[in-house]
Image (cartoon, rainbow, N blue to C red; front, side):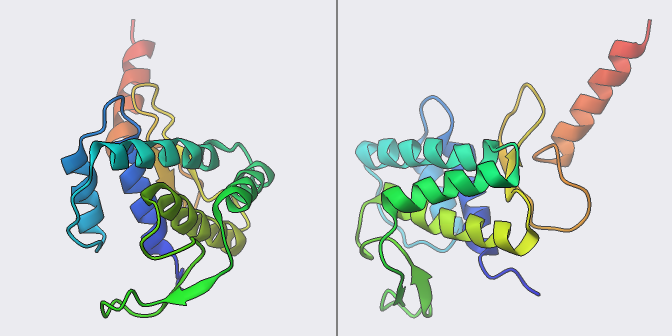
Length: 174
Protein backbone atom coordinates (compact mmCIF):
# COMPACT_ATOMS: atom_id res chain seq x y z
CA UNK A 1 0.00 0.00 0.00
CA UNK A 2 1.37 3.42 -0.94
CA UNK A 3 1.65 5.89 1.90
CA UNK A 4 -0.66 8.79 0.93
CA UNK A 5 0.90 11.47 3.15
CA UNK A 6 4.58 10.81 2.30
CA UNK A 7 4.95 14.26 0.71
CA UNK A 8 3.74 16.13 3.81
CA UNK A 9 6.04 14.07 6.03
CA UNK A 10 9.09 14.67 3.83
CA UNK A 11 8.20 18.36 3.59
CA UNK A 12 8.09 18.50 7.41
CA UNK A 13 11.50 16.80 7.66
CA UNK A 14 13.01 19.18 5.09
CA UNK A 15 11.47 22.27 6.70
CA UNK A 16 12.54 21.28 10.19
CA UNK A 17 16.10 20.86 8.91
CA UNK A 18 16.22 24.54 7.88
CA UNK A 19 14.03 25.90 10.68
CA UNK A 20 15.68 24.25 13.69
CA UNK A 21 18.81 26.35 13.48
CA UNK A 22 19.39 29.43 15.63
CA UNK A 23 18.60 31.98 12.89
CA UNK A 24 16.72 30.37 9.99
CA UNK A 25 17.33 31.97 6.60
CA UNK A 26 14.03 33.07 4.98
CA UNK A 27 15.42 32.27 1.51
CA UNK A 28 16.27 28.70 2.57
CA UNK A 29 12.82 28.22 4.07
CA UNK A 30 11.17 29.60 0.92
CA UNK A 31 13.37 27.30 -1.17
CA UNK A 32 12.19 24.22 0.70
CA UNK A 33 8.58 25.34 0.31
CA UNK A 34 9.09 25.78 -3.45
CA UNK A 35 10.77 22.34 -3.71
CA UNK A 36 7.62 20.85 -2.20
CA UNK A 37 5.23 22.58 -4.58
CA UNK A 38 4.20 25.59 -2.56
CA UNK A 39 3.72 28.80 -4.54
CA UNK A 40 6.38 31.48 -4.65
CA UNK A 41 5.43 33.62 -1.67
CA UNK A 42 7.61 36.12 0.11
CA UNK A 43 8.26 35.12 3.70
CA UNK A 44 8.61 37.90 6.22
CA UNK A 45 10.91 37.56 9.22
CA UNK A 46 7.73 37.19 11.32
CA UNK A 47 6.58 34.29 9.10
CA UNK A 48 9.90 32.54 9.66
CA UNK A 49 9.68 33.08 13.44
CA UNK A 50 6.18 31.56 13.36
CA UNK A 51 7.34 28.61 11.26
CA UNK A 52 10.31 28.03 13.59
CA UNK A 53 8.02 27.96 16.63
CA UNK A 54 5.84 25.39 14.83
CA UNK A 55 8.94 23.36 13.93
CA UNK A 56 9.98 23.26 17.57
CA UNK A 57 6.58 21.83 18.48
CA UNK A 58 6.77 19.24 15.68
CA UNK A 59 10.26 18.25 16.81
CA UNK A 60 8.65 16.67 19.89
CA UNK A 61 6.99 14.07 17.65
CA UNK A 62 10.36 13.14 16.12
CA UNK A 63 11.96 13.05 19.58
CA UNK A 64 9.32 10.67 20.99
CA UNK A 65 10.98 7.51 22.35
CA UNK A 66 8.04 5.21 21.58
CA UNK A 67 4.74 4.95 19.72
CA UNK A 68 2.58 5.97 22.69
CA UNK A 69 4.69 9.10 23.26
CA UNK A 70 4.56 10.01 19.56
CA UNK A 71 0.79 9.50 19.51
CA UNK A 72 0.43 11.64 22.63
CA UNK A 73 2.52 14.44 21.08
CA UNK A 74 0.46 14.29 17.88
CA UNK A 75 -2.83 14.31 19.81
CA UNK A 76 -1.66 17.39 21.74
CA UNK A 77 -0.89 19.15 18.44
CA UNK A 78 -4.29 18.18 17.00
CA UNK A 79 -6.01 19.48 20.13
CA UNK A 80 -4.14 22.78 19.93
CA UNK A 81 -4.23 23.41 16.17
CA UNK A 82 -6.66 21.21 14.25
CA UNK A 83 -10.13 22.13 13.15
CA UNK A 84 -12.73 19.98 11.44
CA UNK A 85 -11.38 18.12 8.41
CA UNK A 86 -12.13 19.79 5.10
CA UNK A 87 -11.35 19.11 1.47
CA UNK A 88 -9.68 21.83 -0.56
CA UNK A 89 -8.11 22.22 -4.00
CA UNK A 90 -6.81 25.77 -3.38
CA UNK A 91 -8.40 26.63 -6.73
CA UNK A 92 -4.96 26.19 -8.30
CA UNK A 93 -5.30 22.81 -9.95
CA UNK A 94 -3.31 21.01 -7.24
CA UNK A 95 -6.14 18.55 -6.72
CA UNK A 96 -8.46 17.83 -3.84
CA UNK A 97 -6.77 16.97 -0.58
CA UNK A 98 -7.51 16.97 3.13
CA UNK A 99 -6.72 19.89 5.43
CA UNK A 100 -7.34 20.24 9.14
CA UNK A 101 -6.19 23.84 9.52
CA UNK A 102 -8.74 26.64 9.69
CA UNK A 103 -8.36 28.16 6.21
CA UNK A 104 -6.28 28.04 3.05
CA UNK A 105 -4.92 31.48 3.85
CA UNK A 106 -4.36 30.84 7.56
CA UNK A 107 -1.14 31.33 9.55
CA UNK A 108 2.01 29.56 8.36
CA UNK A 109 2.69 27.93 11.73
CA UNK A 110 -0.76 26.34 12.01
CA UNK A 111 -0.48 25.10 8.41
CA UNK A 112 2.92 23.51 9.08
CA UNK A 113 1.79 21.83 12.29
CA UNK A 114 -1.55 20.54 11.00
CA UNK A 115 -0.38 19.31 7.60
CA UNK A 116 2.71 17.68 9.10
CA UNK A 117 0.87 16.17 12.06
CA UNK A 118 -1.75 14.69 9.74
CA UNK A 119 0.96 13.02 7.66
CA UNK A 120 2.91 11.84 10.71
CA UNK A 121 -0.24 10.46 12.34
CA UNK A 122 -1.11 8.56 9.16
CA UNK A 123 2.40 7.16 9.06
CA UNK A 124 2.22 6.11 12.72
CA UNK A 125 -1.14 4.40 12.15
CA UNK A 126 0.06 2.63 9.00
CA UNK A 127 3.34 1.37 10.45
CA UNK A 128 2.18 1.01 14.07
CA UNK A 129 5.51 2.53 15.01
CA UNK A 130 7.12 5.87 15.68
CA UNK A 131 6.86 7.99 12.52
CA UNK A 132 10.41 9.28 12.72
CA UNK A 133 13.32 10.14 14.90
CA UNK A 134 16.21 12.48 15.52
CA UNK A 135 19.66 11.71 14.12
CA UNK A 136 21.77 9.83 16.68
CA UNK A 137 24.90 11.74 15.63
CA UNK A 138 25.76 14.13 18.48
CA UNK A 139 26.86 16.74 15.93
CA UNK A 140 23.58 16.58 13.96
CA UNK A 141 20.24 15.86 15.63
CA UNK A 142 18.18 16.52 12.45
CA UNK A 143 14.77 14.85 12.18
CA UNK A 144 14.05 12.04 9.75
CA UNK A 145 10.97 10.01 8.84
CA UNK A 146 10.53 6.24 9.01
CA UNK A 147 8.82 5.80 5.63
CA UNK A 148 10.46 2.61 4.42
CA UNK A 149 10.55 -0.95 5.62
CA UNK A 150 13.36 -2.66 7.42
CA UNK A 151 15.08 -1.84 10.65
CA UNK A 152 14.40 1.48 12.35
CA UNK A 153 16.82 4.19 11.35
CA UNK A 154 19.18 5.88 13.79
CA UNK A 155 20.71 8.50 11.51
CA UNK A 156 19.24 11.13 9.21
CA UNK A 157 21.52 10.22 6.32
CA UNK A 158 24.18 7.74 5.23
CA UNK A 159 26.71 10.56 5.68
CA UNK A 160 25.95 10.89 9.40
CA UNK A 161 25.96 7.10 9.86
CA UNK A 162 29.34 6.80 8.15
CA UNK A 163 30.81 9.69 10.13
CA UNK A 164 29.77 8.02 13.41
CA UNK A 165 31.07 4.57 12.34
CA UNK A 166 34.44 6.08 11.38
CA UNK A 167 34.63 7.98 14.67
CA UNK A 168 33.82 4.81 16.64
CA UNK A 169 36.44 2.85 14.70
CA UNK A 170 39.09 5.51 15.27
CA UNK A 171 38.25 5.67 18.96
CA UNK A 172 38.96 1.92 19.28
CA UNK A 173 42.41 2.12 17.68
CA UNK A 174 45.36 2.61 20.08
